[in-house]
Length: 148
Length: 148
Length: 148
View 1 (cartoon, one colour):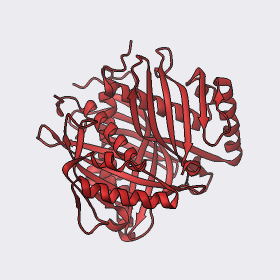
View 2 (view 1 turned 120 degrees about the vertical axis):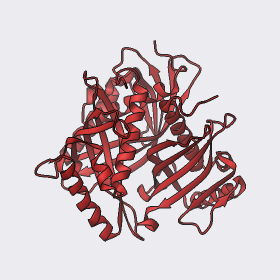
View 3 (view 1 turned 45 degrees about the horizontal axis):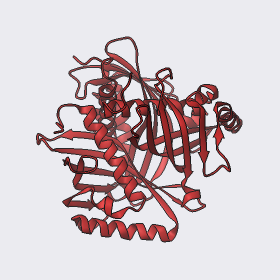
View 4 (view 1 turned 90 degrees about the vertical axis):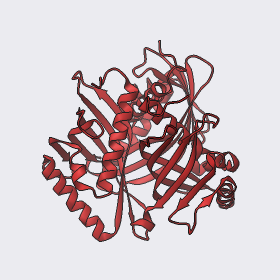
């Protein structure tokens, strides 16, 4: 059983590995495995959306729609997380993170550009059965252009 | 007592956590807590400034001025560190780091842009009383546009 | 003897330190030390090149040519890795990584720009005699503009 308070370096590396894997799934258009990185009742809220997506089905549907639109346009998106701050919560299986995230976008044959700058605030739950040991229970995304 | 030579992974995670926290303070306009992340006699030198800022008061004054200007313009800045190289120094409580750093800037309702690319070279001192265990004793920032 | 399976946090920190050092060498134009970060028979393949570079001499020659061109133009490049996923392989001294990488470019006196977005897939081999314990045996770089 992983003890989230025992070793901050293991905690951080596990979360970084989880995020790298999760966002590579999304950017590679692997919509179903991506949706599985959320808890069954996981939610995805954003200041760009009127209401949160709740549950894996809704999250997969939203990701699938975005993926198909990008494929049609011949565009690759890369989600980068950085400046990740990890906070334990007093619960043995829950951590909070606050991350900067940017999206770089490249059209086929064209120039890469910075699409947006955002902040991702997550509640992660430990799940030993999950591929990298974590699931997203709550994600709140704040686009800087809408928050400034 | 933290032993900086004992465990490179703990050392690195602690520094990454410190930097995430420090730069989020700055970008959130929390000027006083940000100034407290420097040693009392800490210095901030930059190839964009004629002379270093020395001491928390001077560092807070400079950060406060920048923060107010950005707020007036309705602009959010995000400082990202990356490619961090950590070097122990033979002193039990001092490390050096060399980091790439970029600043992304987003105006309210506008497009995010890459503002600048820089290198941050720090001397960090271990302080068990500091929030995340480190203080910046010396920071030297080199903007690539002035160094190229 | 470093055990790559024993401690994921040490593994990750070592690879991050290696990458920071390696790409700072390249960006600082230290061509020979950079070439030494590859295995003697290391290869560098890219979807932008018709054939891979193989061996340190070929890698140094290519890096040297790029370095001289940038110096003549008064341009600084910064290679950033991010979203690094580390995978052990069942071999005691080999890991695979998949990294996003972007290049930021700044001309003397000019504005920084995002030059390109790429994916770096590496096979790294453990070498206790190497400066940071790792050598690149195979690197495959995929530019998003050519892959989209």
